[in-house]
Image (cartoon, rainbow, N blue to C red):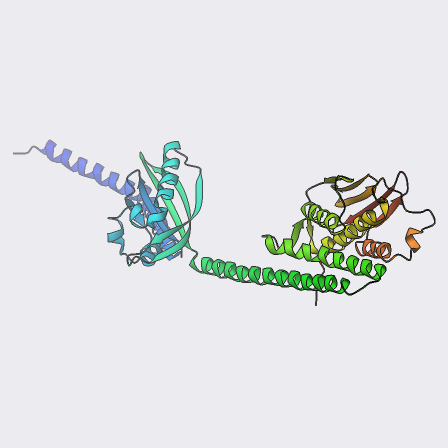
Amino acid sequence: MRSDLEDNWDSIREKIIGLGEQSIRKSYYPELQQRLSELERFRALLDETNEAIFLSEVPSGHFADVNNSACQQLGYHAGKMLEMKVEDIIAPDKLDEMRTIIFSLFDGKHLQNRKTIETVLQRSDNSQINVEMSISLVKFGDIFYTVMVARDITERKEFENALKSSLKEKEVLIREIHHRVKNNMQIISSLLNLQKQYVNDEEAVNVLKESQNRVKSMAMIHEKLYKSRNFSEINFADYIRSLVSDLFYSYGVDSNRVKTIIVLEEVMMGLETAIPCGLIVSELVTNTLKYAFPPQEKGEFRIELHSYNDGLYDLIISDNGVGIPENIDFDETDTLGLQLVNSLVNQLEGTVELTRHNGTEFKIKFKELEYKERM
């Protein structure tokens, strides 16, 4: 038989427990319900995003959670994906890169670091998706996970590939244009050379020869552009070396008799500037080879190219030959070659300075011309 005291104690205990439960409900249940509601909203938000989100254990690689977008993009249901590993969804040729990144994060316990890469995911039907993936390391309790957020960039990659293909076609077209221009100029040069054989007048022969060298100086620029990967600029120092060598050969000048000193900075120059500048070099070098050194007389020819931080260039062509006569006014000369030099310097928006001291020195200052779009 239970005593009245025991019955009273049981009644009191039930009342205490009842009061405790009511207290818990009043103090903790609302907060728990609020937290659960927030988690549900957050989960709904993750499931609605277009990005595929994966949570995987490290180092096993097993998926702990994925969102709806990940399942839809890869063609698996959620239950199946939770049986899979990271390596099951990465394209085979990208797997080593992925492992390296994940284990570098895990080995260093880099919780604050995030790696962003372009990789390829493999669908259930073995088709592939190009994605941009953000990978970061997180820790829940004592377990490390990787959070991988993948954005489908298939359309962007297709656009990039189409753009590359279009650029390649344009490169081929530009290369062909330079090749044809060069060939046409070589034809003109050959015609001038043939014409010289039918002309007996020495002055006429010289005019044809000078015209031929001018055409060749321009053809050489197009040849270098045709052979280059850069269709808008040439190495102008390399061009000058080739041009000077060609002019020495054209006029049959013995390099042992006329010593050549070439001091050139390696400068990349656009077509707009290179052609007039090349013609200037051709005219002044031709002038030196024809008039500076009488037959059998030795001398020195020098050409320099310097560039400065303000974008200015100095082109200096000099020799220690007989010099230009004092009675020749360089600015008002009747000589076609020197008239052409003046005109080309103006085209470059530059200045030219002539010094008659122990020979002749032309100093030309100019800037790179900006390309003006044609209508």
